[in-house]
Amino acid sequence: MAKKKILIGDTENKASFIFEQIEHMNIPFTVDIEKMYVIKRSSEELLTKACDEEYEFFLTFVVQKRDIVKVEAIIAQHASPNERDEWQKKAKKIKRKETFIFAIWIVIYSILILTIEVGKTIDGNSISYIACFILWLGGTILTVKNYREYKRAKEEKLLKQYTLFSIIFGSSCMIHAFSSFLTMNR
Picture (cartoon, rainbow, N blue to C red):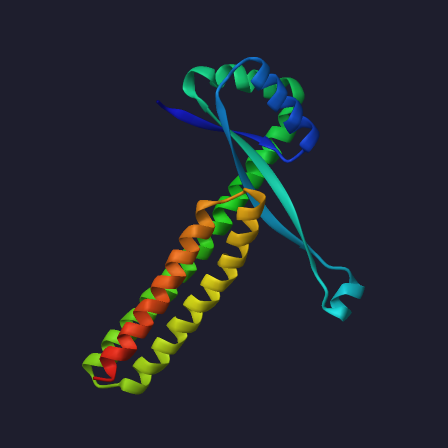
């Protein structure tokens, strides 16, 4: 059964009205919630170093292919084409941001693994120890940061695959760093 995601935006009033319309038409759907952090700081907050995170949500309906035309017609009734274009741009920005973060972590991870292995072969233990420490520290930071977000998202029932993958990736960095450290001490 093929499914398609349809972005409906971030306005609660429009989203709730669209929910009601789709439920009224008995169209089976699921909702995926994508979020982007927008941090706003005023000059006073910068001095006190207090910061509030403001969440901007983008709701996405996942519907079967046979119902795509009906759902898009409902959305077109309640949102202007400019709003839909803006929603699409914001959704792409979120995806690019997440992809970019993973790309940076994978490049750093690869460089550190290469440094550890080269250090083992040429008996450059000090370089390997430093690379192990950086890998372990990075994995710890990534795991802790995303675990906090995971707990918050679990309470709000907004679980995303991004946070789970980040926790697993950070944990694997820590495990690899620890195992490399143990093999260097033998």
